[in-house]
Image (cartoon, rainbow, N blue to C red; front, top):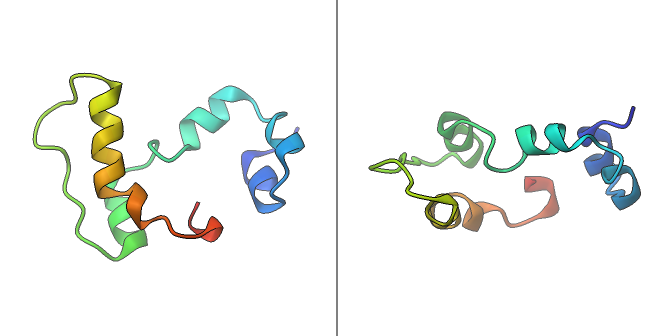
Length: 76
């Protein structure tokens, strides 16, 4: 079985398409803990002040607090 890590390291779209969907969902950009991202970015990242009302709210928070720090393929 192809792993998500293998597909990403090899930058292989064909292998990525063989990875079970649940693996990608679980390990995607929004699957981590804020503490992990803070350590990775060497930055103080605060949680949302209130629960997200919908996925759009979660995406907006992610874009403004984490996504802008991803600047290179090695960051993914």
